[in-house]
Length: 279
Length: 217
Image (tube, rainbow over all chains, first blue to last red; front, side, top):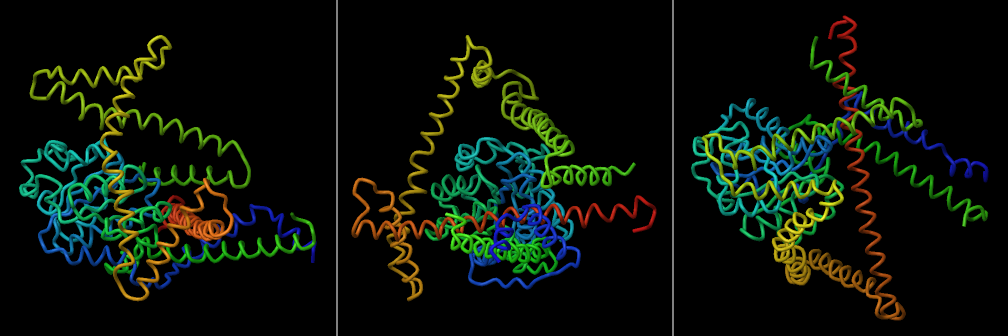
């Protein structure tokens, strides 16, 4: 038995890699979908806040991420854009990260096509602008000065839906989909606390624990954390086979496998320590 | 030539080359690693010229409608100062640019950062106990006890014995719970990226193989 525990303790890490790979692949191959109940979570707060916005409101959606975090943030972007369009809310997209502008364009144009929404009347993509927090402060005094044109070089004053928008205070809500800095924290600091505009967001799972503190203080109205947050929003919006919802089955199976390995590792460790093998 | 399929195959091959490192270091991994670093560097240079320098600086200095705004020469000179670091004799000039960046950053962030991350958080912690039902009050008490005991753990001006020691022990326990939650979220994030890659390999790349072999699909 001692030998067994010793072998277990020295298990080739490649066996673990193979088992994790299988635990992710099998649910995808068999198209497994697990139920994803959404309780009283920050994801629901976010959904409820957007749902309560009156028709015709303006929402600023900032795509502050790049392709490396697409699996978590792109499903969020698509679900949020779908919800905003369903509620007939005007969506103004922009990005604090260079490649976010293209990813935002993909999310907005695909949803707009499926719902018959018109660019420049229902949605617009202002594109990327460098500067992070400094630029956000400038948006608080004049948006057209920062974005004289949209992403496709159409002048600000020729875009019909931007006629009633002058500063950040023209927006009922700002949503940042953030993979790091600059991202949600910059928006909370420079737009939320400075200009009083409500801030919501979606972030990678890695940064979620840091951002939960802003929920408790009321500095954010809601937060989608990682793939689970994306799956929650897809469920609430009614996307039954969304990328995030489908991703939760491999996510759950892989977590079970990891937990099993944690238990096995601890059993092996304590057994060896009992025998005096490990100190 | 179907460019979409070519792109999918390139993506799949590079993904597999990178994952091959999990078995052991090998030339395929090295190739993909160097390809990634080289392409990233080249991509970012061009991207920054196109999306930062030209729209934010050049087009302001030399507007498309004509004229020349000399004031925009100043940021250009500061940018050159940054590059001056590569010549040892002129390296000191870069301090002017860095000083400007640090000064503006510190000035802008000082009040906002303190307001958002200190005052608002302290207020949130103090006033959290004042409202809500029984569960909310219990939750708030855990928050307050956690914050205070966590701070005591980092208070080294008094020996961690007696009441201070016991409070510090509560603090380290709360910190470990927080680190555990953070670690759990990190695993979820990494798995999400793995799932994204496998969804690409199994749902986008794999179906192209029968199409290439002329087996329909």
